[in-house]
Amino acid sequence: MTLFNNKKIDVIRIGLQNTDIITDPENPQSEVVAGPYHPAFRQLVEGNMWYDAILSRIKKFSTKVKKIEILANDVNINNIIGHKKENIEKLKDIYDVEVVVKPDDRIKPGKYEINILENYTDFKEE
View 1 (cartoon, rainbow, N blue to C red):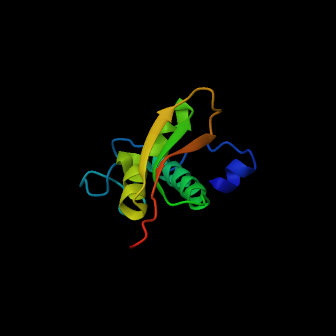
View 2 (view 1 turned 120 degrees about the vertical axis):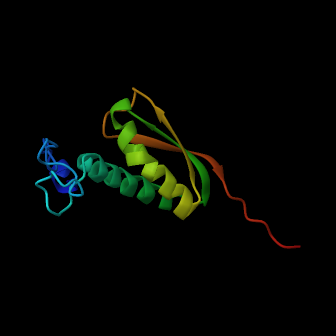
View 3 (view 1 turned 180 degrees about the horizontal axis):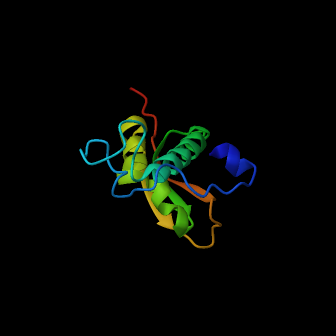
């Protein structure tokens, strides 16, 4: 999807449209036998793209951050947080970074700002 975004191509649909016969493969009435079906497949993909972009930006800081604030347009907030807060939890669990996400309609859709609220300080043993 990043390739399409870079070429300014709108992606209209991702995944299967959920209908009575196309449902969760674990449902015996479903005609989906197997595969990457998820009712929120688009959000999973877009959330993962946002996670990668934010993580890349965090890694470029010259300090080990403890807490950040992400400002973004309201239309992007759900994808930044991730499906079931997945992105926020991964940043906390894997990188020990607390994240505060705030909407800011001055920021264009697809863009974001990161502010460091707290960083870790090195303590020298005496």
